[in-house]
Length: 634
Image 1 (cartoon, one colour):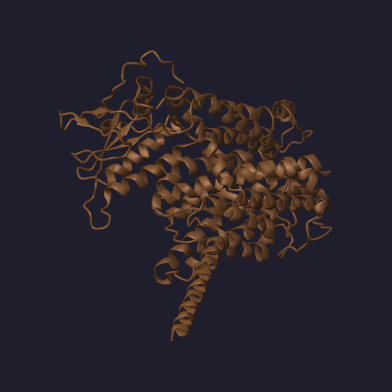
Image 2 (cartoon, rainbow, N blue to C red):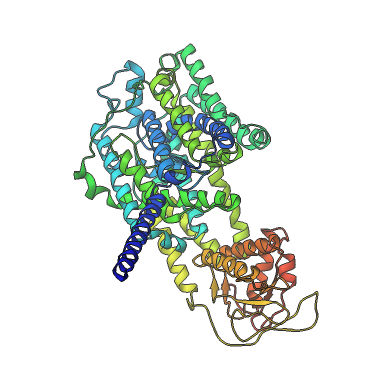
């Protein structure tokens, strides 16, 4: 009998171990392949119609934008369609954001274009002119430089490998040390490169290609010299297209998007194709057109790995930029709709996009904020919308290519140039940054200038370097202070002093609790602060084990006596936790905030949040409020 009990006990333990192992494998598989979890619970009745509508709406935007960004990358327009077909399908399987629209976008297309510029033997402009004349093709790759296409496939492979390694080594933690202002400055500088690269197409002129330091100044010089040779018909089409798109983006879209987004770019493409076909503008007016587009999907081919050593540096920069755009866009919508984006899994999703896509003539993709915003406005629920986008692009590739052949190249240039409006709008941050945080202003400006005077790759390297150096200069201590002290806090509601306990997070008799702020609240620790504070609030707000909630009077005091510095991102984090406390009916107070930092917070409140933080600032009563009146703004 005893032996039977022992055998039964062993059997139960083995069964439990097998179940535990199964759960571990299942959870790991669900984390790395998220579609296995959410697709089994997909609500077809409520979600499918929203996903289809959003996918169709975004899809008609993707078609012209993909063709335009492909010319920016220095490859024929059809390769933009290829890239925008494969990327959404793969992201649907491995991605964790419900709202982002993945595909090629301007900044990375420009970085890929620099690779093409370095290795290509024949310019895309020349090839387009040839195709527009005789509609000949040498192979499935449009007769374009076959070696260059191999390099792009290899570049996609190396970017995928880099993103896989970054995910494995948790590089997502490092991105916390890259500030929003650095990314904004870099993207504005890259937008200048993108804009200048399209001027020759908009004017219908040719001039020598430039690369290296101060390349934009040489391009500007050549534009000035060749402007008198511009093709007037091309200029007319460009000006008309740009005017139409700017009116659409700045005037019509804000109004019409409330009801239904209008695909203005697609309408422009259709109208100009009809005009080009009817008037034969290439033959009669010398306007360059897209030319022959091969029908059907491209053939698979194995990347030529012999090019890997030449592409490692480019691939690192492209891998980082793709990730930064995906994660920044994904987090915006995740916070708004209250779900979680796995920042580490996004590396693996991007890696899968590139490692699987590299067997076709594509180049690395990321996320588009403008298309993602449209996706959200159309009520998208899941990544099924990306499948709809890919399906629409497939139809265009297989059946509609012939109808796009008369499309003027200058129209694609106009789409690219007007698509930069959102990036250039970021310059509007500078006056606010100057008033609130000089360091953040410097990061933005230096990132932008470094990118403008060099190229996007070296601009990214310089931007990251300055961002990290500025962080080291500002960082006095990295650990949160845990000194035992007593802080006195007064509230408007109760003039009597509330004594905070010696310990960091203990509640007082009145129910108020103290949260000890770190030495610095900057972009490197802002995300961690928000997560830590949310957990702290939930821990004190909820009852545990049948006990009463510890936050009995719904009051939390942020003890800022050790807080020496707060930057723009830190103020945004403080604003977020304040908003969260308001929604949770929790009173938030400050104590011990130094005068210099309080002045910056008041400026942030005035210029950014439009007095939304009035209650928080006015409920601050500091124990060290006068010690730093003359402290220099850091």
